[in-house]
Amino acid sequence: MAYPIPTVAALAVSPRGRVLIVRTTKWRGLWGVPGGKIEYGERMEAALLREFAEEVGLALRDVRFARLDEMVGDPAFYKPAHFILINYFARTDSEAVRPGEEIAEWAWTPPEQALAYPLNVYTERLVSAYLEARPYG
Image 1 (cartoon, rainbow, N blue to C red):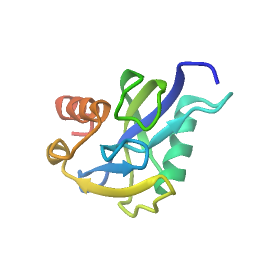
Image 2 (cartoon, rainbow, N blue to C red):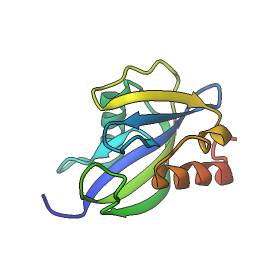
Image 3 (cartoon, rainbow, N blue to C red):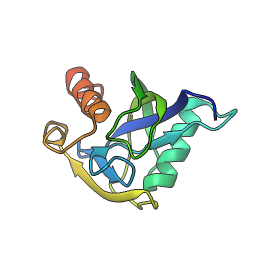
Image 4 (cartoon, rainbow, N blue to C red):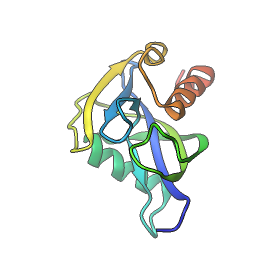
């Protein structure tokens, strides 16, 4: 595979104003947000909707671009990798998570309290951007 690998992820906001964070098997115990790789020929937002459905069984709406990051060889990731991280904010109408095989644990939390979790650095930046922007009021 050519590098860097483009990925998408989102900080999802429930009707109760809580955000979804997940602990996966890939981040050495750190928490993040659901997402994954964009497939060849797939549009970014379509990839995000697909990945969210696969990883946590949730549909997203009101998707808004949040921030762009780059990960190069982060030792917190389970293997050497170079990713372009295309991150979004989005709403979901449910908190009923149906975890896929990569999800070890999940939590719905007020966004301010998400920063108390051991987040990977990219998710910490995403949550901080959400708190600064308050895109959904």
